[in-house]
Length: 110
Length: 113
Image (tube, rainbow over all chains, first blue to last red; front, side, top):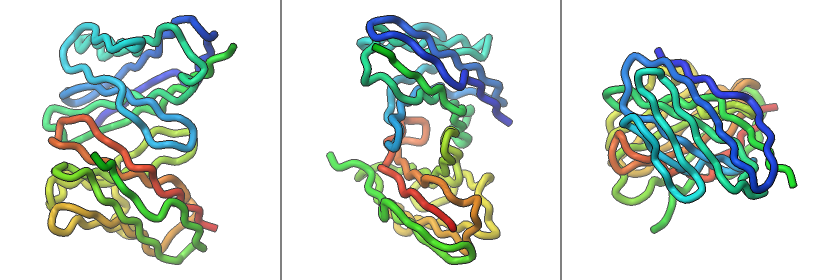
């Protein structure tokens, strides 16, 4: 089976940096995805990691350590519009099991 | 490029009634997913199609839920009969390949009273 853990809520200040962690336990691994979901809207894709290391995309970066079953999403220069839930999702070796974590609700304060 | 389309956007039914949701994926996307998202939780995969074949339906409550994807394009998800605990947002997503990035539709918010 698969188990994914994320902090439930986080709060940060506009302009700051925040790191959202995700730990997972899977029977196989074929990639980890991060999605952003604003309240009442559908999730939108942010990043994908399949190899260890850091993937940078503008203000957002995502890191993966497969040996530790650990990933984080780093958000820089926070803006009010970054207030949303951030979902970590893992796929197994055959791409048949796709599991989302519970999500981390981020509040960005002025 | 048109996104994933879903209808209806909202539905209110009484328990024990039936309901159906429709999804049209992005053109050319072979893989289609249906998720159930209860308020405050992450999406839970119900069923995954590769073209018109089922890849994974291990979390689909088959006594009341059914889904099909005729001709490998549009898909419908049905609940019969509905229970109070089925109140959730039902999300459809598609991807070009099975391992790829998923694109989500706007979802259908179901309320069972």
